[in-house]
Length: 529
Image (cartoon, rainbow, N blue to C red; front, side):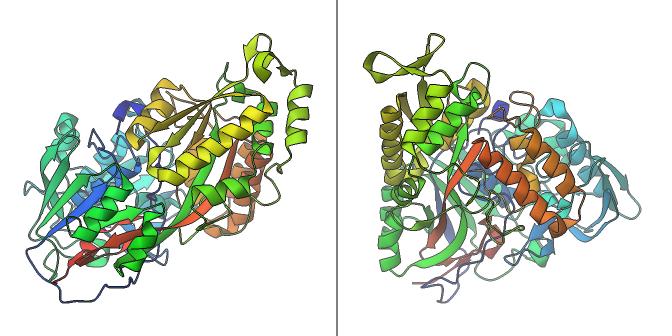
């Protein structure tokens, strides 16, 4: 599920889950005496750019956000709702009322109240602001009213929202100064979180310092807890092997691994925290004039791939087949919507599909239709490492055998977000949108395309749209069968194809922590020796 504000970026693009909970890994070496006053150094694989926490939900910024900002609620590793800025909450039909903790302060010492929550909701809910949280974490059409005397806020919404509490756990709250002047948030922070930003050096590092008096973290977590770091330094390390080396040397205290380097870190007996999610997810650009606008092309490109082999290469043999779209643990709707819906590998059938659709072989074996060549640009995230590059080459070879001209475009997360949401110059994209509940995916799979909405692939599938309406009318997990049936409609039409899951590990040295969608800042404990 991963910062270009204008791009209205993905919900937890690439690997970090939006609010899906993962078990806090027990690790191999999480013991040791905790120490105060230490610095926790974490690596990210790309500079997030604009730090405004409500204008992008791509994974790198999303991780950084939780150091300086709080959500109204939190989700634990067992998918249970915990307190955050709100100490109590009640869902009543198409509204939820939250009681905001008294005494909450912003990093500048000013108070944070229910009225500020209402202003945050108003900003995100206004379509002109193009917040990626609208319709993903915050239901479309939401309105909020505050009761100053009770310090409560009521958020109402016009349509059913069966997982609304889990969505609110993904929305960071901005303090009054930042709401009044969002330019302050580009390279600074104005939040209620456990840390405040003190330095942002583009392309190199970002520094946060611990706030004293913070007592409103997940389930009442406090920065007074022994072992909390006094400072957090986030270093930009694009190469995963370099990050692994820095971790082993002690220059880093935390790093997430997606590729083969995790094996040698396993052998080093470092602390580990685990999360699972979709690692391989193939999107087709349905925009007018793109090859993917033709369903025969999408189906043929899918059939031409041995997805089991691509999965094996992508995950260096450590992955598993995809099962559902919303795959962050604990999964709200477990099951398998993929197995019987994705077009099976059959190169002959793929060629026949293109023949019947009028894509005829031409010079050099490249097919064309109405004078337009079957030219495919495959965008893949360089954070996928050597496995991602090798898998992309494997796919390109298969598609060339099908009669396509293939261009590979490897980009880091920030660049990929720009391409998907701003330039639109792609045909197939390997990017992951990782969440735990299927309703959070709806804006990426239906509705307005970019730049008006988050539907960056311009998908229009009436069967999916009908099924999600039926699913959303049922409370919580009661609608899971309908949600999975809706996903299957997407796969049958080759609109989007998940093909690989993986256990993702975040390793720690001289530190332990929990990963619940993101690395939880208040869970960090620095260790001696």
